[in-house]
Length: 88
Image (cartoon, rainbow, N blue to C red):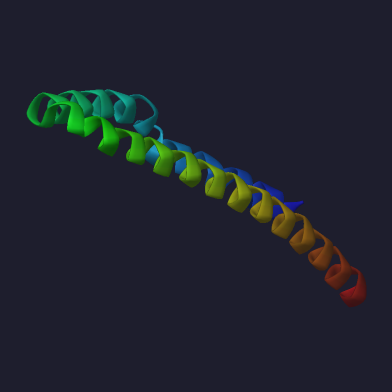
């Protein structure tokens, strides 16, 4: 329905806004990790491991939020259909 069209257009707008991070973030991370390792030596490994574990938990949280958003969109579509039926 209309709600899915709005969600699709918002997804495209978000991709346009943040799509460049797909290639720039990994490159920045390599540069930063290399620099930190050169400055701190082997102690930087613990920080890098912590950051990577934090990223894993962030991806898990984002996945759960995405699933919840999809469920909310489905419920919103059903609610709008019921409202339209009642008003018609």
